[in-house]
Image 1 (cartoon, helix red, strand yellow):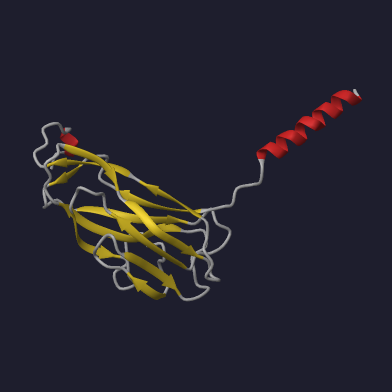
Image 2 (cartoon, rainbow, N blue to C red; image 1 turned 90 degrees about the horizontal axis):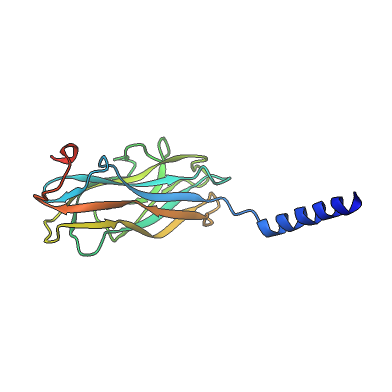
Length: 190
């Protein structure tokens, strides 16, 4: 019996050691295009919306600020028409809703560093929502279709003390089709 108990305890210790340290909790920042699972049409007219979404419910502290850069897919021309991501023009479902912003730098273009920061210590605890909404069109293209995604770079999520918080990035994939693309379901035709 003692040998069985010793074997059991030995196996338990090995399992615990193999499990390793508990992973740090992290926020999730992601690009989201809500187009009903339909492809985007590269016609230079149809407007689409890209959201940059933040979920810090995995962190054990508030988030006071975020900076990011949206990189548009290469080989396609995206034209940003307008943007909501400031205290005066809040994004829909704003991550920083009801917060007074200390610093904001959000412009209607991709490939530029953007940032939103609340007053020190006034951040969001256990929240999720949009940091920004970009409306854009896609210039006509020659290819029949392209499977691609926006990517986020230069991301930094800041704690109330100004320290970087752990995060992971998720970039939603989508399909762009040329104007007049022949194979499209009825629900996706505009």
